[in-house]
Image (tube, rainbow, N blue to C red):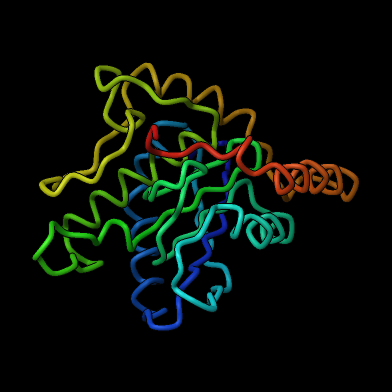
Length: 228
């Protein structure tokens, strides 16, 4: 059994007209899909915890900074090693491009847009959340985002699919794994992922100070999944 335990809070952030039940079911399946891959790559035990969902007032596109405040609070309260936000709304990068996800290694927060993964070619209906295409692309994206939160940068495709710049693949029907070199690095990085439950009040206060700094300068710590 792995000696290291990494706890991740998962928040479903849904717009008014989207089924919370469907989004949470999607998030649950997503976490189940990536857990064994992350455990094999890091040598740690990964536990994803369902957090109280957040209802968005509108379905307007959001910047990642719109989620940072709530996610950071949940991380400290958990306490968690990282937080994943799964939302149906579109995400906008600092260059005003719509992207499927954003991640911060400083704040240890990843935001994934399920709605973006449902977009089909013009003239075709939206993909269903439980379709194989959405499921496999979502798992690939979350692995990519988690890699960023742990400190990995983008890598060329020759080094492995997971950390190469992400794009939605309509024909994707399987979930890739991390390459050998990346796994070795993830094993080392996992050792430096502190367990929030072991932190005392003073350390948590220091953590909140750093998270607050991230909130004031979100675009300095958030890594867009797509190079724009």
